[in-house]
Picture 1: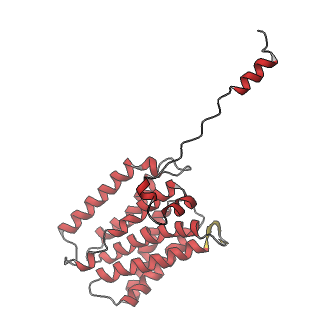
Picture 2: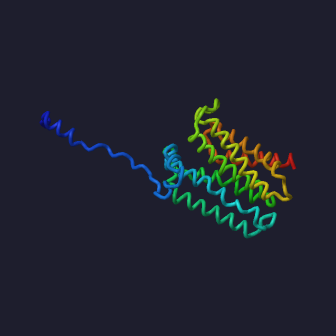
Picture 3: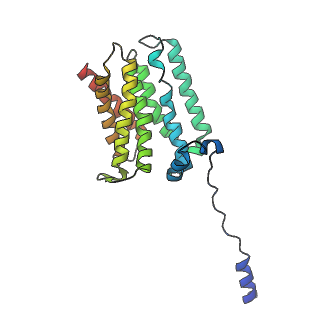
Length: 241
């Protein structure tokens, strides 16, 4: 077979089609128009932004619960809402999974089950102590969620035991998780608990969960964070009340 001439080789290189670049995910225009969203997306990326929204949004569900009359041990209406919400979260996670999976993940359903397990388990296993389940939900949703945002947006010094994590992420987890969890704990506890005592209980639980989340352990961090928050919260409740 005859070799191509030099002119043919030059023409071949000139006409070579460059390798196509992967298409970057985009947000809707109305989402990007929200103040601050563009800056966050520039720092953490579109996929991580969507993931944080999905991760933190369940914390909105129990916000109005302290002001709604309901049984101490949740009755059929609230339990039905709980089960319906759980199924809805699983369906949404499956449908929108391709938009939320990180580049180093094959599937993120394990993270979803690890997120839901401690929360739903606490609400079903401890009837009449819904404050433990809601505390766990808030620490997972807003505490863990804000750790990622704080670490990526603020940055700063790395943790000596895990160079991939920062002090800013750890502090964001502990502070936001404590405030959010203590609100739900205070609003749901029967008999009532003074807010400072609820803040102390949930603050210790959130701090312990933040430390556990920061450990360089290759396991489902949602599950270990949720179990830690729930266990420490129960122990603190028994000790304080």
